[in-house]
Structures are given as C-alpha cells and as structure tokens.
Amino acid sequence: MTVLDRTAESSSILAARITDGPGGYGGVVADEEWAAEIRRLATLRNATLLAHNYQLPAIQDVADHVGDSLALSRIAAEAAEDTIVFCGVHFMAETAKILSPAKTVLIPDQRAGCSLADSITADELRAWKDEFPDAVVVSYVNTTAAVKALTDICCTSSNAVEVVASIPEDRTVLFCPDQFLGAHVRRVTGRENLHIWAGECHVHAGINGDELAAQARAHPDADLFVHPECGCATSALYLAGEGAVPDDRVKILSTGGMMDAARATDAKQVLVATEVGMLHQLRRAAPDVEFLAVNDRASCKYMKMITPAALLRCLVEGADEVHVDVDVAAAGRLSVQRMIEIGQPGGGE
Ligand code: SF4
Image (cartoon, rainbow, N blue to C red; front, top):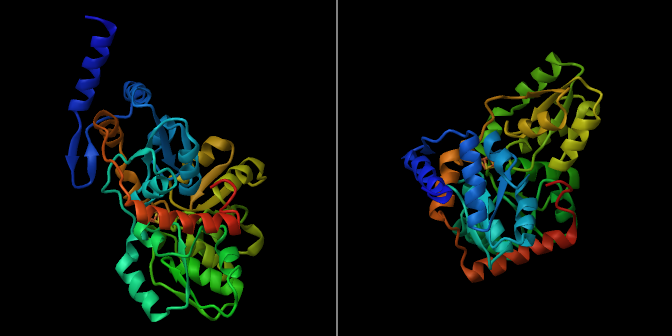
C-alpha cells in the first residue's frame, strides 16, 4: 500500500463518521488528524479557508484567515485560490460571492442562517420602499443578497453614522434591519426623518442593559469592550450611549481595534459584550488579561453549525455551493461599493 493509498483510506474513514441531524453535521472530533486532513483537502481543492470571529475555536485555528464578514469578503476577492470556503453564516458567504462572482464559494452548512438577516425579506423591503418612494435605503451588511440588491447604501456598525450623515438632510432614510443600530444612528445624527425596521439578532437578547450594568458594578476596575459588528452587540452599543455603564470605561471597537486594545490595556480584567466566539481571539492576543463575557450564553447557534464535521464534508464533497443571481449580485455589489466610497467600513473588520 502506498502513502497515497493510506492517506485516501484514512480520509474516507474520517468522512464515514460524519452524521447529520437537525442541529447540523456531527460525529467528527477536531483533533490533529482532522486538522491535517482539512489542510490537505483545502490544498487539493485550491481553496482558501475563511473563518468568522464567532466560529468555534477549532475552526478559527485551522483557517487561513479569521475576521469580520466584510474583511473576509475582501480577502476572498483578492485571494489567489479559485475556491473560497466561508466558515460563517449564509449572508456572509453571499457577500463573498457578490464581491467574487468568478470564484466558487462554499459554505460548510447552508442551513446556517442569521436571525437578523432573516428579519427583513426582499418583498418586505419592496413594500416599505413603496410607502416611501423617495427615500434612501441604508442596510446593515447583515442582510441577504436580495435585500442588498434593493439597497442604496450598505453600512457596518463602524460607519453607519457616517453613511447616514452623507445623505442630504431633506431626504427620508429607511434603515434596516437592526433596530438597535438604527436607534444609535438616530441618536448620534439627531435625524428625525430616519425610519427604522424593527429587526434584531437573537443573540443580543443575552446582552441586555441590566446584565451590562450589573457586570460593570461587579468588576469596577474592568474595561468594557463592545464589538457590535455582527448585530449581537448593537444593543450594548445603544445601552452604552444611554449611560448604562460609565463612559470612560467603554470602548466600542472593531475586530482589529479590539485586538490592539487587548494588547495595550492596563486593566487586569476586560468585560466583553459580544458573541462569545470573540473571546478566543482576545485570549490568544493577550494571555495575561482575564476576558469575561458580559453574558456567556451569548452564543450564535447558527455560527456554531459550522462544525468540524461540516467543514470536512464541505471539502470532501465540494458542498454547499453558494449561488447568487447575476443581476442581484451586480445590484448588491453597487450598494457595498457605495458604502466603501463614503467611509471606512472599519479598520480590522
Ligand atoms: S450573532 Fe446574530 S447577527 Fe450575527 S450571525 Fe448570529 S444571529 Fe446573525
């Protein structure tokens, strides 16, 4: 038996363990053998592996790049490889496809949705636009490709204020789908003609004002890092502005900013208001600092559907492939490009 035969044999033994259930693919342990197989298959497929910050630690560790959705989509567009494996939720893989239409984009489990992106459909946005035919539509990047295609300008939490401020004051603005980010933008800009869609992320419910204030009281010397890039902590962004915690201890940060602040902080403890996956990165960046989740139940079940088994299956089968209609992708790309022209979507996103 040659080395190649042995590799193929152990590969198929590993793949044979994959199970499928309502919570996603399982049956595979993220050990060294798995990581080596993932890397081998990625090379065979000429694929680059991208992992969102909220992915399981093992997925982050095996990936080529870890970051926020927009930064990963930009890396995807520039990557030399012709296949992108996007370990994140579906709208993120769609955004990568919008920005890299010629590449094959795979997501390890296409059932990984997003409650925030699902809180407005293209039909609902079309009906809302019909009510306000002269309005400018601003959408957070957590939206489907079909919603982006009906959007004038996309935004992230880092540049939402700048994007809205760039619109002439007499123009009505429709802001979707995140109500907390919308409320934050309305407060900062003082804009009355900003209509906000009542969408939200299910994870944010674990990061509420009482919990935030109680944690701040219990750890009086700790800094508070808020990372609202995925919708899960936009409520904390809003609450921090409402005075739920002392101003001087709150730092609203993008991923890159959060890593820099983690390395630079004098605080022994840092409270982190975001999805718990971000803690893995922070602990790696600053092992001497104690990072505590404001709510350790703030975990996105959709992000966690990208399991070791799902990633293995993806690379073995070349599935699930993400398709975006050509016209939808072209219109969606325009809304993302307009955002980039107006303002930085966020340094380290
Ligand atoms: S954390 Fe919230 S906004 Fe982010 S993917 Fe999960 S459900 Fe969507």
